[in-house]
Amino acid sequence: MSPKMRKILLHICCAPCLTYTLKKLRNNKFKVEGYFYNPNIHGFLEYKKRLIYLLKYSKKVKLPLSVSREDYDNGLRKYFEFIGDHKDDRCPICYWIRLEETAKLAKKKKIKFFSTTLLISPYQDQELLKKIGGSIAKKYKLKFYYDDFKKGYRESRRMAKKEGLYMQKYCGCIFSEFEKYERCGVKAKR
Ligand code: SF4
Image 1 (cartoon, helix red, strand yellow):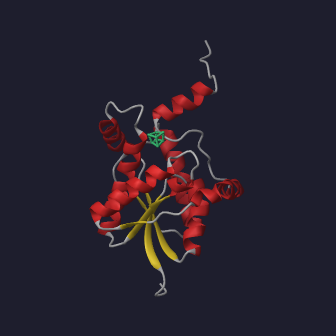
Image 2 (cartoon, rainbow, N blue to C red):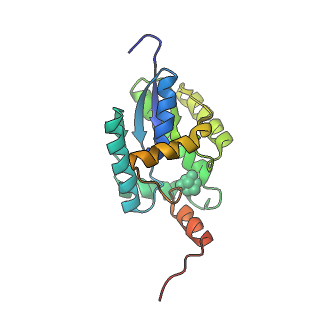
Image 3 (spheres, rainbow, N blue to C red):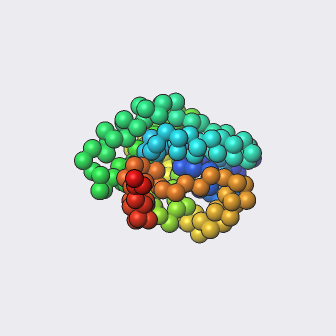
């Protein structure tokens, strides 16, 4: 690693969001390691699909990747315990859970910076992510790296398409799946 390079642990929600974010971080002289921790993802096959494509893509771009050792069942239970009655204002909790786990791993690995691919999404609350990342950084005496990755959102979709990556149809949790398909007017066939 050149002396000017800084290490960063990047929380990754999915392979398409990683594409541009990784390129940008590497251009900014970061030595990136990835972490897949997303207990919010419903259901199991969706979770597996997102993870499998990420594993493939990480290998291709030579990204060291840690995957949460917590199994799907335990992760999901924990997610619902945290969310509790906050079904309608669940996103800040969901951000917190994932970023805090990332910070804990960064601490363990002695990596000073951490960030998240969620910062590329125009569908996520960027200001809130920045605020939560900052609070967690303070708690663990780390640095949360914020960048307006959103500028590269379209490019990330192009890159993902070119690589043949799986693009999910909803954010992750069961509520987001319902909201997506309910909006589309999906009706059960009888
Ligand atoms: S909508 Fe997305 S960010 Fe919000 S709780 Fe669900 S999975 Fe998490």
